[in-house]
Each structure stands twice: as C-alpha cells, then as structure tokens.
Length: 127
Image (cartoon, rainbow, N blue to C red; front, side, top):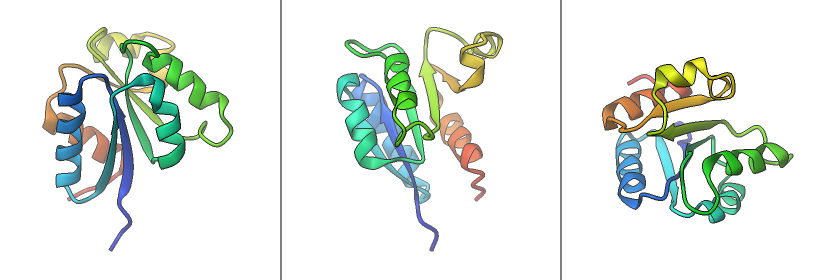
C-alpha cells in the first residue's frame, strides 16, 4: 500500500479545517493535520513536515503570508509547497497578481469536492 500524503491545513475557522480533514482523509490518500492559530502553524509544520500546506491568508495574529515567509526562510521547511486559500481574491484575480500567481491558490468559499480534486491533481492522484 502506498504511503499517504500528508497535508497540514492552517485556517482560523475550525469548521473549515475539520471539513477539509474529513473530506481529504475520506479518500484514503491523505493524512491531515489542522492548525487554527497562525502563531502555532510554523511549529506544527516543522513537526509534521507535510507534503503540502493549505494556508488561509487572512487570519488574526500571524496571517498566511507571514507564515509562508517564515517557511521560505527556514532551510528545513522552504521546499514544502503551499496552497493559499482566501475569500479576498478570486482565482482569476490571483492568476493576474504577480505575487499570488507564483503560488498554488484556491478561492473561498471552497466547494469540498473542488478542493479534494485540486489537492488530488496537485499530487497527481487518480481514483
């Protein structure tokens, strides 16, 4: 059996992180960790060393761009891919923004099936 891919979901909305965890783990392809406090995210990511971080941009305290910056500055974490999620911009707007277009991105509200599809595509996992 193939090793499951690990995903850490960082979002201050606990309902959202639990939904993503359930949906991804239900596929049988993923092990998911959740973090609802931006300030705790870097240490959790350091402990998990996930294959992907799904990261909300707008959070109280430390926001997603700050977390991503800390990951990029850390030699042990800089290669972990980040997929940003936010309600601030649409996918089309993100594709036209030079900073956001360099990153994986999904706009909120996120349809559960679309999110699972996007993560599976990222890992090139087919059913």
